[in-house]
Length: 90
Length: 406
Image 1 (cartoon, rainbow over the protein chains, first blue to last red):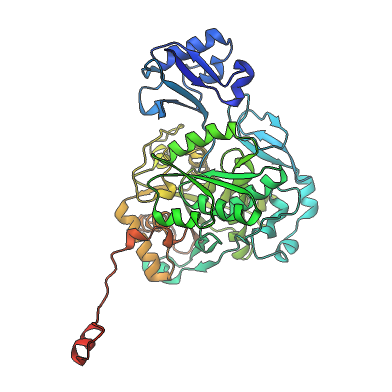
Image 2: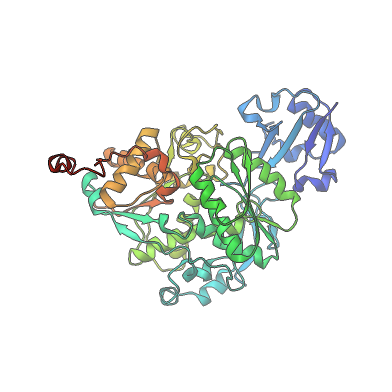
């Protein structure tokens, strides 16, 4: 069982589909696997310093990874990752 | 045309005017880019002064291209001189902008007036929102008035008064068993999937947020075309805070006022103060928190305009203050007992912050200070529900006893 990523509209020009399956035991590994499948997507998510783009929120099974270990947050197989634009709400 | 396009605040990429809020290049927020040449030709103080006693007197500065259809007559709420509260705090020039008197009893009527009318302009048929309560009420009322299908998403543990004051207009109410930030995540995902849906504070956000400028416009107009020295504003997402100032600076840009030096002060509850934390730590990023406060209407742990708010405080030499739960309740009571205004917990946060700032001598007593009271106390009555009463038995004819109670 892989990990399912829900892809936001701005990235569907790259992935075509709105969900993508990846493998990895941390968020960082899943993003690297995503980059292997869709070359060029990683730089939209991670900046040059290796940090998450500040306008994006990553959720693993509904939990914001910044409340956990960020890119090093562990992921179980069968989990969902939401990539959600941060500029909304309130 | 008043609006040229949407523009990314970060990378400046431009987009056609549409229900879009996020840049496809860098994920930055999109904003409305106005055609100022066109606006200048059509606007004047005289024209504004003759306009309706609502936000629509400022229609020339709002992002609608056609005449508004949905009108609950929001805005143009009283700006009252708070003489008693001022005296209590040693402030000679204190004012309360009372947005609790809007049609659905919060400032959200301003922003939803824009979002709902723009939704109609786009031909969208369902009006929706992610809400901490006040927005749901306003969206439900505007949806009803405008004949739009309405769906509101709220945290399950919202105050029942807020659920009632949205539910009475008969929207579909969807609850999420979590915080506002959980509601926001789910709605942001839904906003990408539901065609024909206008999420007021998500895909309509660039237009929606412009409605808050009208608070800034009104304060200036009601002070006699003068900007105040200080504004104290509650901080939820930070959108209101930044747009109030935008309103003031647009009036300066148009030459209606000059040499403004308004200091912007933001107020949050200690139980949810990610913006204050960033200000105190001199930080250039917002560390999200998990909210825990009675000030539920501003319980946003991951504020979309948090960084913009921090920058605005620094730019205007303002301050950021956080207050305790008890201080919030004392703030509600003090405003009611001195000025006869009953505000909800977000207003309590503002008054508690006012008290702190005045005790720290950060508000010179002769400076014009305006407090934004954004919501009505009847939305959060439980926090002040321990009311003392003197009780007389209905059958009593013992005069001494009756007199003793009075």
